[in-house]
Image (cartoon, rainbow, N blue to C red; front, side):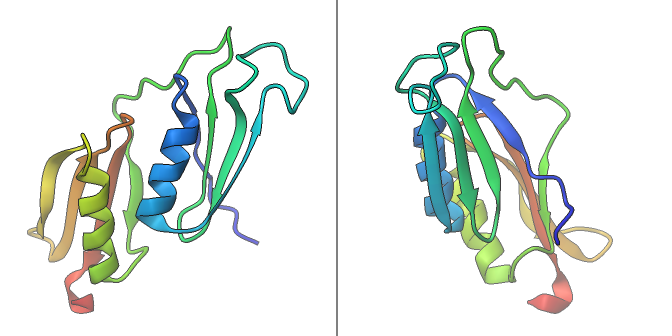
Length: 136
């Protein structure tokens, strides 16, 4: 059983788009349920009340309901250090930066010998990706 925390992010009406984006970046399977499907009246009927990406990277995403705040993160990064091969890490990094994302710190060898970099994606999430240089 994996006991690592899985992010659950509330977005401002963009959860379906974000789930598709992250599935394109990381791979995996997406499932969603709308507010209407759950019989909930606390959000727009067609918005995502619960969305899941299961794959190499797991995420939960939903659209913020009427009385919920959408994500606004500062000082938080989602870490994918040592989670993939160097080639896959570079692919994920480039994909997260695409389409309106921003490279904060490019993938580079750091003084301690590992390679890492930070990217903020178009949905406002910051990602720290990296690998050990002995991996490639």
